[in-house]
Image 1 (cartoon, rainbow, N blue to C red):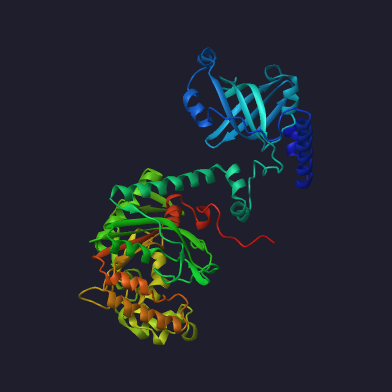
Image 2: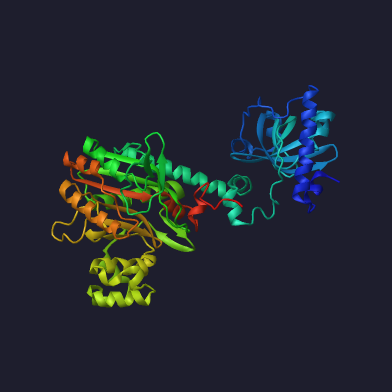
Length: 509
């Protein structure tokens, strides 16, 4: 029976692992007898599969034979066919796959006998010359093969891969081995994030790093993770946003700063929420929320072109057109545009009744004590958000729910703030920054009162941040963009877990 046939049998996985451990045991014994090393670390591949394909795939057999180009590769053995004195193996490296032709005559009887016992998943090196098989497949005719790492666990069946989605997330290393689409998705993510960084630097923004451990959580309405610093003997918080530190840098005299890094929020997990997520926040002195919207629109388009090559994307089977100017609506306009509320949008009683129909209640949601603006926001979140498929800036949020944003000069009840929605999801949040230290102190006091009333997400009073503002911060605009959600859009991924290499999961039992 050939090696391939043996792999096809529905054997118990534990049995397969036991057989592989026995093979490794034999290799360790051989090492004690001076016959090689069990886990050698002295091979350096000179070539990669993709580059070899690109350089030689278009050549005919005669040209390749005449050139006799040497090749040296290493990778994971994904396929193997043993046919008496000659065999084929397919190696997969970080760039792709290439076939290796292994013959007893070329590598010697002893090595060929060892090769026949190697398993799929083993990491193998091959040296030889480039040629084409009778079927026209570019291959390497090996003169030397070597086992670099023995794989002790069998790979999932090549026809079915990893069927269970949770296992794909939990064992991402296997997912990446077996699913080319997953490798492409994370490569695209890396390139897109690099592209965002390049875009910011090109526009004179300085990349900075601010603390992850905060003595006071701030910069967003969110529930933080808490921890304890032993040496300082004090409670610390994983950051929920870098905002307050970045604005301190604007006070310090840097006109444009940005940070790409993690934020942490101790909240629910869903297709669009992970407890730790990557965000880019940026701040520019002498910009307001209108400048930010223009820039954010440009940034999103640039990232899309770099990641996908164009501005017309498909998400969940529906078109997303980034080539058109992004819509700009206030919360009230959005409600009127996307619902039949009409003039009722200004009626507290109508909104309370509508929210009750949607399943909210007095006890939990405290509807009767909310202002008109707060009820409008709730109704917007419940009914309108999901309808904002094409890129839309929702503007001018109520001051009471925007404790760090600058109020509008003519309408102080709203702020110069926007949220960007695409495919019914929030992608970014930005505003003209509040730079009035005394007003900021009053807003913090209001947040502390809300926290005392039971709002877990309300902000703490940050004395040092107020002190920084007292030194004077120039008029400034700032924005945060959720990069994970952006990557979901650019890679047409249904869940945030698909674009995070190691998403948060419940610990294995």
